[in-house]
Image (cartoon, rainbow, N blue to C red; front, side, top):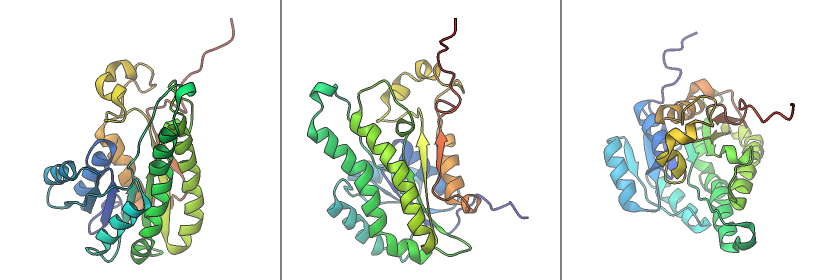
Length: 262
Protein backbone atom coordinates (compact mmCIF):
# COMPACT_ATOMS: atom_id res chain seq x y z
CA UNK A 1 0.00 0.00 0.00
CA UNK A 2 1.34 3.41 -1.02
CA UNK A 3 -0.35 6.32 0.75
CA UNK A 4 2.17 8.97 -0.25
CA UNK A 5 -0.03 10.51 -2.95
CA UNK A 6 -3.39 9.48 -1.55
CA UNK A 7 -4.63 13.06 -1.17
CA UNK A 8 -2.81 14.65 -4.11
CA UNK A 9 -4.69 16.18 -7.05
CA UNK A 10 -1.80 16.64 -9.46
CA UNK A 11 -2.93 17.03 -13.06
CA UNK A 12 -6.63 17.14 -12.20
CA UNK A 13 -8.99 19.81 -13.47
CA UNK A 14 -11.62 21.24 -11.11
CA UNK A 15 -14.47 23.73 -11.28
CA UNK A 16 -15.78 25.37 -8.10
CA UNK A 17 -18.93 27.48 -8.36
CA UNK A 18 -19.20 30.32 -5.88
CA UNK A 19 -15.43 30.01 -5.69
CA UNK A 20 -14.50 33.64 -5.11
CA UNK A 21 -15.26 33.72 -1.39
CA UNK A 22 -16.28 31.76 1.68
CA UNK A 23 -16.45 27.97 1.51
CA UNK A 24 -15.89 27.94 -2.25
CA UNK A 25 -12.62 29.82 -1.88
CA UNK A 26 -11.50 27.51 0.96
CA UNK A 27 -12.04 24.50 -1.29
CA UNK A 28 -10.41 26.11 -4.33
CA UNK A 29 -7.33 27.03 -2.28
CA UNK A 30 -7.07 23.47 -0.97
CA UNK A 31 -7.33 21.98 -4.45
CA UNK A 32 -4.66 24.34 -5.81
CA UNK A 33 -2.34 23.43 -2.93
CA UNK A 34 -2.74 19.74 -3.81
CA UNK A 35 -1.74 20.29 -7.43
CA UNK A 36 -5.03 20.77 -9.29
CA UNK A 37 -5.83 23.34 -11.96
CA UNK A 38 -8.91 25.05 -10.58
CA UNK A 39 -11.50 27.16 -12.37
CA UNK A 40 -13.55 29.34 -10.06
CA UNK A 41 -16.89 30.79 -11.02
CA UNK A 42 -18.90 33.57 -9.44
CA UNK A 43 -21.44 36.12 -10.56
CA UNK A 44 -19.13 39.07 -9.83
CA UNK A 45 -16.29 39.05 -12.34
CA UNK A 46 -14.10 41.36 -10.27
CA UNK A 47 -14.26 39.18 -7.17
CA UNK A 48 -13.61 36.10 -9.26
CA UNK A 49 -10.53 37.60 -10.86
CA UNK A 50 -9.23 38.94 -7.55
CA UNK A 51 -9.45 35.54 -5.86
CA UNK A 52 -7.85 33.79 -8.81
CA UNK A 53 -4.93 36.23 -8.70
CA UNK A 54 -4.51 35.61 -4.97
CA UNK A 55 -4.53 31.82 -5.34
CA UNK A 56 -1.94 31.77 -8.11
CA UNK A 57 -1.56 30.73 -11.75
CA UNK A 58 -3.30 27.39 -11.28
CA UNK A 59 -6.53 29.19 -10.35
CA UNK A 60 -8.44 30.53 -13.34
CA UNK A 61 -11.44 32.88 -13.17
CA UNK A 62 -14.50 31.90 -15.17
CA UNK A 63 -17.26 34.37 -14.17
CA UNK A 64 -20.83 33.21 -14.66
CA UNK A 65 -24.29 33.53 -13.19
CA UNK A 66 -25.51 30.00 -12.42
CA UNK A 67 -28.86 31.12 -11.01
CA UNK A 68 -30.54 30.23 -14.33
CA UNK A 69 -30.30 27.22 -16.62
CA UNK A 70 -29.11 29.50 -19.42
CA UNK A 71 -26.31 30.73 -17.17
CA UNK A 72 -25.42 27.17 -16.20
CA UNK A 73 -25.17 26.13 -19.85
CA UNK A 74 -23.07 29.19 -20.67
CA UNK A 75 -20.60 28.26 -17.92
CA UNK A 76 -20.40 24.67 -19.15
CA UNK A 77 -19.79 25.88 -22.70
CA UNK A 78 -17.07 28.28 -21.55
CA UNK A 79 -15.28 25.47 -19.73
CA UNK A 80 -15.63 23.13 -22.71
CA UNK A 81 -13.83 25.72 -24.87
CA UNK A 82 -10.84 25.42 -22.54
CA UNK A 83 -10.80 21.79 -21.40
CA UNK A 84 -11.55 18.36 -22.85
CA UNK A 85 -12.40 16.84 -19.48
CA UNK A 86 -13.43 17.77 -15.93
CA UNK A 87 -12.16 15.69 -13.02
CA UNK A 88 -13.89 17.53 -10.17
CA UNK A 89 -17.04 19.65 -10.03
CA UNK A 90 -17.94 21.41 -6.78
CA UNK A 91 -21.50 22.74 -6.76
CA UNK A 92 -21.07 25.38 -4.08
CA UNK A 93 -22.93 28.49 -5.27
CA UNK A 94 -25.96 29.07 -3.09
CA UNK A 95 -28.33 31.56 -1.49
CA UNK A 96 -30.36 31.91 1.70
CA UNK A 97 -33.50 33.84 2.61
CA UNK A 98 -34.89 34.47 6.08
CA UNK A 99 -38.31 36.09 6.58
CA UNK A 100 -41.13 35.38 9.07
CA UNK A 101 -43.64 32.75 7.97
CA UNK A 102 -46.47 35.27 7.52
CA UNK A 103 -44.38 37.41 5.17
CA UNK A 104 -42.26 34.84 3.32
CA UNK A 105 -42.41 35.78 -0.41
CA UNK A 106 -42.53 33.62 -3.50
CA UNK A 107 -39.35 35.34 -4.71
CA UNK A 108 -37.52 34.10 -1.61
CA UNK A 109 -38.69 30.59 -2.36
CA UNK A 110 -37.88 30.55 -6.07
CA UNK A 111 -34.46 32.21 -5.87
CA UNK A 112 -33.19 29.83 -3.20
CA UNK A 113 -34.64 26.63 -4.64
CA UNK A 114 -33.44 27.50 -8.15
CA UNK A 115 -29.85 28.24 -7.12
CA UNK A 116 -29.47 25.62 -4.39
CA UNK A 117 -31.23 22.66 -6.03
CA UNK A 118 -31.97 23.27 -9.69
CA UNK A 119 -28.59 24.73 -10.66
CA UNK A 120 -26.44 21.89 -9.25
CA UNK A 121 -28.53 19.37 -11.17
CA UNK A 122 -28.45 21.20 -14.49
CA UNK A 123 -24.78 22.18 -14.22
CA UNK A 124 -23.85 18.55 -13.61
CA UNK A 125 -26.04 17.60 -16.56
CA UNK A 126 -24.40 20.21 -18.80
CA UNK A 127 -20.92 19.01 -17.77
CA UNK A 128 -21.81 15.32 -18.01
CA UNK A 129 -19.75 14.84 -21.16
CA UNK A 130 -16.60 16.38 -19.66
CA UNK A 131 -17.06 14.42 -16.43
CA UNK A 132 -17.47 11.15 -18.35
CA UNK A 133 -14.33 11.97 -20.34
CA UNK A 134 -12.39 12.21 -17.07
CA UNK A 135 -13.93 9.24 -15.28
CA UNK A 136 -12.44 5.76 -15.31
CA UNK A 137 -12.83 2.68 -13.09
CA UNK A 138 -9.42 3.27 -11.53
CA UNK A 139 -9.96 7.04 -11.16
CA UNK A 140 -13.56 8.23 -11.16
CA UNK A 141 -14.49 11.85 -11.74
CA UNK A 142 -16.08 13.60 -8.77
CA UNK A 143 -19.10 15.81 -8.17
CA UNK A 144 -19.24 17.35 -4.71
CA UNK A 145 -22.43 19.17 -3.74
CA UNK A 146 -22.16 21.65 -0.87
CA UNK A 147 -25.23 21.10 1.25
CA UNK A 148 -25.60 22.20 4.90
CA UNK A 149 -26.36 20.95 8.37
CA UNK A 150 -29.54 22.99 7.92
CA UNK A 151 -30.66 20.17 5.65
CA UNK A 152 -30.13 17.72 8.52
CA UNK A 153 -31.60 19.52 11.50
CA UNK A 154 -33.66 22.60 12.29
CA UNK A 155 -32.00 25.93 12.87
CA UNK A 156 -33.62 28.66 14.98
CA UNK A 157 -34.24 31.01 12.03
CA UNK A 158 -37.15 31.18 9.61
CA UNK A 159 -35.19 30.13 6.54
CA UNK A 160 -37.91 27.96 5.01
CA UNK A 161 -36.69 27.66 1.45
CA UNK A 162 -33.04 27.34 2.50
CA UNK A 163 -33.65 24.41 4.82
CA UNK A 164 -35.90 22.73 2.27
CA UNK A 165 -33.34 23.26 -0.49
CA UNK A 166 -30.44 21.78 1.45
CA UNK A 167 -32.47 18.75 2.53
CA UNK A 168 -33.47 18.28 -1.10
CA UNK A 169 -29.87 18.55 -2.30
CA UNK A 170 -28.74 15.90 0.18
CA UNK A 171 -31.24 13.46 -1.27
CA UNK A 172 -30.59 14.61 -4.83
CA UNK A 173 -26.94 13.73 -4.20
CA UNK A 174 -27.98 10.12 -3.58
CA UNK A 175 -30.20 9.98 -6.65
CA UNK A 176 -27.50 11.48 -8.91
CA UNK A 177 -24.89 9.15 -7.43
CA UNK A 178 -26.99 6.10 -8.27
CA UNK A 179 -27.12 7.14 -11.94
CA UNK A 180 -23.68 8.63 -12.52
CA UNK A 181 -21.65 5.87 -10.86
CA UNK A 182 -22.18 3.81 -14.03
CA UNK A 183 -20.25 6.54 -15.89
CA UNK A 184 -17.44 6.42 -13.30
CA UNK A 185 -18.56 9.73 -11.81
CA UNK A 186 -18.90 9.70 -8.01
CA UNK A 187 -21.39 12.15 -6.47
CA UNK A 188 -21.12 13.10 -2.79
CA UNK A 189 -21.87 16.09 -0.59
CA UNK A 190 -20.39 18.07 2.26
CA UNK A 191 -22.73 19.52 4.91
CA UNK A 192 -20.86 22.41 6.56
CA UNK A 193 -21.71 23.80 9.95
CA UNK A 194 -20.46 27.16 11.20
CA UNK A 195 -17.81 28.58 8.87
CA UNK A 196 -17.07 32.28 8.57
CA UNK A 197 -18.57 33.54 5.32
CA UNK A 198 -20.85 36.16 3.82
CA UNK A 199 -23.72 33.68 4.06
CA UNK A 200 -22.93 32.78 7.68
CA UNK A 201 -22.34 36.21 9.11
CA UNK A 202 -22.98 35.01 12.64
CA UNK A 203 -19.93 32.75 12.45
CA UNK A 204 -17.96 35.45 10.65
CA UNK A 205 -18.78 38.32 13.00
CA UNK A 206 -19.51 36.53 16.29
CA UNK A 207 -17.39 33.40 16.08
CA UNK A 208 -16.66 33.12 19.80
CA UNK A 209 -20.33 33.31 20.73
CA UNK A 210 -21.33 30.80 18.04
CA UNK A 211 -18.57 28.43 19.20
CA UNK A 212 -20.17 28.08 22.61
CA UNK A 213 -22.94 25.93 21.12
CA UNK A 214 -20.55 23.69 19.16
CA UNK A 215 -19.26 20.52 20.88
CA UNK A 216 -15.77 21.04 19.41
CA UNK A 217 -15.70 24.50 21.00
CA UNK A 218 -14.86 26.45 17.85
CA UNK A 219 -16.15 27.36 14.41
CA UNK A 220 -14.71 25.70 11.32
CA UNK A 221 -11.43 26.78 9.72
CA UNK A 222 -10.32 26.93 6.10
CA UNK A 223 -8.31 23.74 6.64
CA UNK A 224 -11.35 21.87 8.00
CA UNK A 225 -13.32 22.56 4.84
CA UNK A 226 -10.43 22.09 2.43
CA UNK A 227 -9.53 18.79 4.08
CA UNK A 228 -12.99 17.30 3.65
CA UNK A 229 -13.17 18.39 0.01
CA UNK A 230 -9.67 17.12 -0.78
CA UNK A 231 -10.56 13.75 0.74
CA UNK A 232 -13.63 13.35 -1.46
CA UNK A 233 -11.90 14.70 -4.58
CA UNK A 234 -8.75 12.60 -4.29
CA UNK A 235 -7.94 8.89 -4.50
CA UNK A 236 -8.63 8.71 -0.77
CA UNK A 237 -12.35 9.19 -1.42
CA UNK A 238 -12.77 7.01 -4.51
CA UNK A 239 -14.96 4.45 -2.72
CA UNK A 240 -17.32 7.03 -1.19
CA UNK A 241 -20.49 7.37 -3.27
CA UNK A 242 -23.77 9.15 -2.47
CA UNK A 243 -22.62 10.02 1.05
CA UNK A 244 -22.95 13.36 2.86
CA UNK A 245 -20.02 14.17 5.12
CA UNK A 246 -21.02 16.46 7.98
CA UNK A 247 -18.27 18.96 8.86
CA UNK A 248 -19.64 20.88 11.82
CA UNK A 249 -17.63 20.21 14.99
CA UNK A 250 -20.28 17.80 16.26
CA UNK A 251 -23.30 20.09 16.20
CA UNK A 252 -25.60 17.63 14.43
CA UNK A 253 -24.32 14.28 15.69
CA UNK A 254 -22.62 15.00 19.01
CA UNK A 255 -24.59 17.83 20.64
CA UNK A 256 -26.37 16.98 23.88
CA UNK A 257 -30.08 17.76 23.94
CA UNK A 258 -31.97 19.24 26.86
CA UNK A 259 -32.93 16.60 29.42
CA UNK A 260 -36.55 16.35 30.55
CA UNK A 261 -35.55 14.47 33.68
CA UNK A 262 -35.64 16.23 37.00
